Length: 495
Ligand SMILES: NC(=O)C1=CN([C@@H]2O[C@H](COP(=O)(O)OP(=O)(O)OC[C@H]3O[C@@H](n4cnc5c(N)ncnc54)[C@H](OP(=O)(O)O)[C@@H]3O)[C@@H](O)[C@H]2O)[C@@H](O)CC1
Ligand SMILES: Nc1ncnc2c1ncn2[C@@H]1O[C@H](COP(=O)(O)OP(=O)(O)O)[C@@H](O)[C@H]1O
Ligand SMILES: [K+]
Image (cartoon, helix red, strand yellow):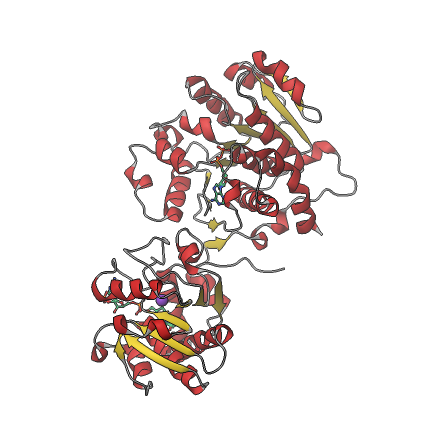
C-alpha cells in the first residue's frame, strides 16, 4: 500500500533538516544533494551546452543555486550567476557553497536573462520573511518578463511557503524542484499555479523524520483513504450499505437535494431518501426513481422521520432556505446524532451565530462544507477564524472550534479534522465552478458516511472523487453529469 503523501510546512521542514543533520548528514551535504537535484532537473529541460542563468539569494536557497551552478558547469553548460545581496555576508552552508563556485558573480537584477535557455530561481525559499521590494522585486520582474522558462528551487521566490500567497511579486515558474516533501504553497492557490509541476527530490531525509516533524498535513490523494473506501461484500444487502436522507427545499428549490441524493446513491449508499416539504412532494416525485421520497414538514417532520434509526447519514442545507426553520432542523439533526453534512443554507442560516456551533458536533460524525463566502458569513465576528492568512489554519481552527470536519471549498479545497489532521485537494478543474456542483459533493460525502466511512476520510475521498469526476469530463460539465461520472472514478479506484 502506498503511504499518504506528507506535506511539511517551512518550519517543520527546518526541523526535519536539523534532525537529519543531528543524525549524521552534514548540512553542507544536504545542500550539495539539493543543488545536484536542481542540476538534474535543469538537465532535463536544457540540452547540453545550453545557457543557464542562475539567480542566487542571500540565504540557504541561494546556496543551493551556487551548488547547482558548479555542477552544471562541470556538465558542460554555460552558466551565469547573479547574486542578490552582499557576498561576504553569506553564512553557513551557503557561504561554503559560494566558495566552491569558481565563476563570476554579478548583480542579480542585471543578469543576462534575455540570452538564457533556462533561468534557475534560487533567490528565496522557505526563509522568505517579508514582501519583495527593491532589487529583489526588480530581479523577479525581469525574470518573469524575459520569456525564458524558469526552474524554481524549492519554491518560486516571492511565494509564501505556508500560505501560497504572493508576497508583493513572485516568480512564475515553469517547474519547481523541492526537497524531501512538498510544502503547502505547492498545493494552495495561487502558489500551485506559480510553481508549475513540482518534482520532489530525495536528499536523504527519511520518511520517519518527516513524519515525526510533520505528520498532520497531507496531499489529498487515494493513499490517504483508499483502504476505507467501501466495497460491498459478496453477501451484502442494501441495508448494510447505509441509508442517506437529504432534506429538500420548497417547491421551486428542489433540484439541489436531488443532486445530493443522486450522488449519495452513486457512491454506494444502499438506500437514499429525499425528505420533502409537503408542497414539493409532487415536483420531487416527478423526478425520482431509485431514490425514495418522504414528506417532511419542518423540524418536527424531520424529528419524526429520524425515529427510523436505519437512516444513518443526513444532508442538510442545499436550497433549504436561510431562516430560523433551517436552524431548527440543524438542531434536530444534531440531537439525532446521525452522520451529518451541513452545507449552504444550513451554514448561512447561522450567519454571525457561529457560537451556536461551538463544540456542537463533537458527538456524531459531522462535515461542514463551506466555500469562502459561507465560511466568512458563519464566522462573522470571529476574527480569529477569518483572519489567518493560511487556508489550512482557517479550516483547522474552525474544525477545532466546532468539533466537525471542515471542508473549505475552492480550487484548493482544504479538509481539516478537529484532531489537527488536514489535507489539501489538488485534482479539481475550474469546470467544477458550476451551479449545483457543491450539492453533489455533499451527497458523495454523506453517502460515504452512510457506509461507515469516518468523517475525515469521507470528506477527503468525497472531495477527490468529485474533483476527479469533474476533471474527467472537462468542458461543458454541469452538475447533473457529476454523479454519473462517479462509477468510472470508482472503477479506477477499486480495480
Ligand atoms: N536547512 C538545510 O539544511 C537545507 C536547506 N535548503 C535550502 O534552504 C532554504 C531555506 O534557507 P533559509 O532559511 O536560509 O531561507 P531563504 O529562503 O534562503 O531566505 C532567507 C534569506 O533571505 C532574506 N530575505 C527573506 N525575505 C526577504 C525579502 N523579502 N527581501 C530580501 N531578503 C529577504 C533573509 O534575510 P533576513 O530576513 O535575515 O534579513 C535571508 O538572508 C530552503 O528553501 C532550501 O532551498 C536545502 O539546501 C536543503 C538543506
Ligand atoms: N477553480 C476551481 N477548481 C477546482 N474546483 C473548483 C473550482 N471552483 C469551484 N470548485 C469546486 O466546485 C464546487 C463548488 O461548490 P459550491 O460553490 O458550493 O457550488 P454550488 O453552491 O453551486 O453547488 C466545490 O467543490 C469547489 O471546490
Ligand atoms: K526559489
